[in-house]
Amino acid sequence: MTPRRPVYLAGFDVFRRDALARGQYLQALCADQGLEGLSLFDNDLSAGLEGAAARYICTLNIEMIRRSDAVLANLNVFRGQEPDAGTAFEVGLAVALGKPVWAYFDLDRSLRQQVSHDVQGYDAQGGAVEDFNLPRNLMLATSWAGYRATVEQAVGDLRRHLTSAP
Image (tube, rainbow, N blue to C red):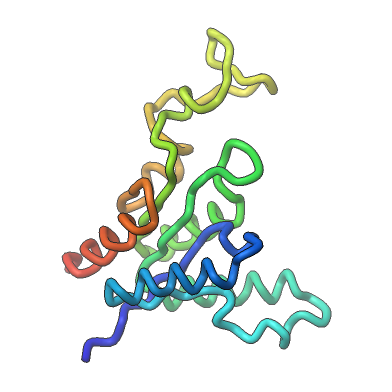
């Protein structure tokens, strides 16, 4: 039997009320595709939670990304108009390590269509809204291997991408 290829599950799903159930669902989707979904909840979190919990969790996540073959990233908007900052970090780390990233999010419009701006292209804070016809910030959108609207679609595409890669 071929071992399942490890895939890090990046996203704000860990903050949901049903985080454990959601994580199990994502891992089951991965298993159905012959992948092993790596989740923060796979670790014994009690060991590092007495003092430096945040650093401990960060270290665990980085270790899982390092040992994964790819990252499956939830880039839906979170607490505003952009993806979760932690997920963006994880995507950047994966790209820096040469690991493919497959993203999923339900809004497939350009940033200019998503973010309110004036006729000159500036938002309410005076910042220019990118006009590259991309659905996410250019640093994310030009570095992922692909994206889909749903995690169910994305995990299958990621498996195909991994099995077709040299």
